[in-house]
Image 1 (cartoon, rainbow, N blue to C red):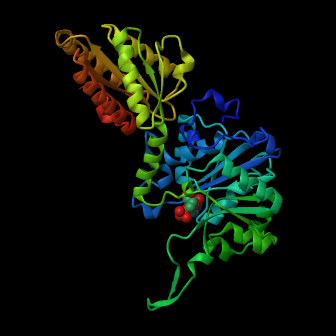
Image 2 (image 1 turned 60 degrees about the vertical axis):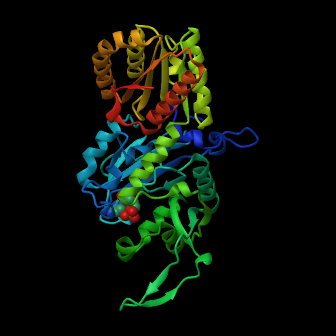
Image 3 (image 1 turned 180 degrees about the vertical axis):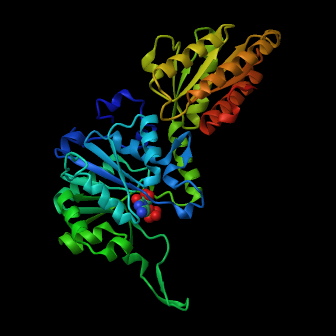
Length: 436
Ligand code: C5P
């Protein structure tokens, strides 16, 4: 799936697990198909009034990262997209530079926006033209325009939009209407209603031959700049180009209200919880417990790969964002500490929080009582440190039982707790030692 050699050094994007293989049935990659320069303009200069928050929605944060960074990442991972122009309000300019720096975005150029969405987009397009401020960016053949507040657009759909834009001059995503559209009279009565089956909602992304959309913006009126909302309409009216419309997936939805942020967070959390690495150790009891856990988590749609040890296995550490370490050793906290160190060195939790669930198996009640008190404070310290690096560390104590039914129940409880820690990624519970 990962086509960008530079980007492939970065941890896997969890959302790409939800998307089909990048490439077609003849084994051609998307990179082979797009042999021309493509750039993106992301208008992000709105103030997000409908959100009801003082922070513009594109800068609202979930899982320790602003929404705009998720959208940028979506495009940055695609090797055939060269440049991403992000258009922000003057007062957000420095904040945007900070986001780029903090999350290591590499393909982004920041441009100042205007008072309306059309003005902002035009400013973005002008970044590809020579100006008095210095040399311009390489002018693309096709430019994709996408809202900064729609983080979930998949590569195969972007490819369809891009190729249609190359062929037809313009293309845009559409979706069926969810409600009927009506016109009202000035007195607030029904004037007429539209036949829902005949109409579609115009969504983003949209694609254009750069020259066509640039010409349309150069020719359009002040009225269009002030009150227009549809780039496809400008391409038709001012460049005579009729756009190809392509039905898009439901994931194209726009974060508009506060509740949409929670929805976006849950989409990401779900994608992050699809797989885990389980480190089982080598003794019979921990291996058996690992096998139980693997089976129970698989029953709840989590793919779990089991390894005996993580030590020295750097490839393993970059594979997933969920680790479950089962250990019966008194030294097991040292192993966890080592894992946290490696994850930090590799910057593995830069974009998404990484979860480590430490399962400490005691062979008897007595040994559990003896060690627990000592462990608690060192574990809490380690978890506090790990959290600063976006690694969420949770602990679960398990006491081995020789009674098969009790042991079975214990393994079941352990699976449920582990699964919910991974799915919820709740920072408030890090450093806690739970009991299965
Ligand atoms: O307000 P609306 O949801 O239609 O905004 C869509 C996108 O256009 C958002 O990403 C918003 O930041 C952007 N926008 C802009 N400049 C404006 C107004 C909106 O870039 N003046």
